[in-house]
View 1 (cartoon, rainbow, N blue to C red):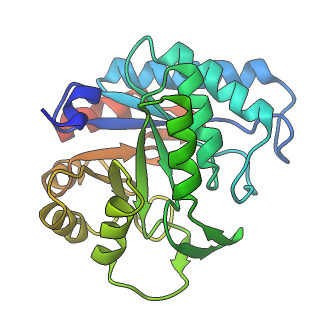
View 2 (cartoon, helix red, strand yellow):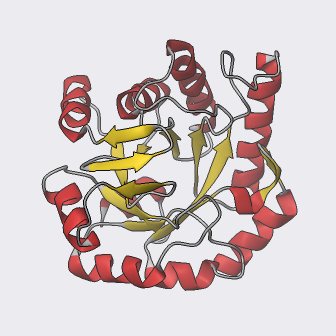
Length: 259
């Protein structure tokens, strides 16, 4: 049995994204933390009720993002919510833009099972500037915690470009073999754009035993096709009415189409 099946209790997990409303301190924060928390709770419950196998929290409302850190209260809020959601199923954390250690801390303290890291190895040019992978620091921090939280790492993450052109498979191989990522994520160029399904299928062939997720742009129309190419799906904006508000009907339709 692979770690993927052990963690998610299924061979092809569907992971729904809980986009947090702007948090305290971010430019668009609305002034009420209880509003943020309750919206996240509703989203997570809607996703689990619809049949999603797991959820992942993202501080999606906190634009513009820091490069590789978030404020301590963001870690605390994420940990609190993960602790609640983990009672219903596996929960992960992605703290944008690339706050891997902070996400790991929140997942570890909250009982989360995985984190998403946008740039785990290598370096990219993004709207935050140059973002460098910190695999060595992230893995050593996980080791110091005695944690088993899994690391899902993006390959050619959206809203970014590599500083030096390289073969994507070579990048992915380095991410797994030298960065020790537990799984990989394929995205499109921007939020809501479908990633390259052929590339996902190729990575699965080249890196046998390493789970590959489609991490952006999958809709109910393409869900079944995506699960043929990849080992799992991470989906967020396709299910939302507005930021942080999951449409229950869309969530149920997505699960039905995928299964």
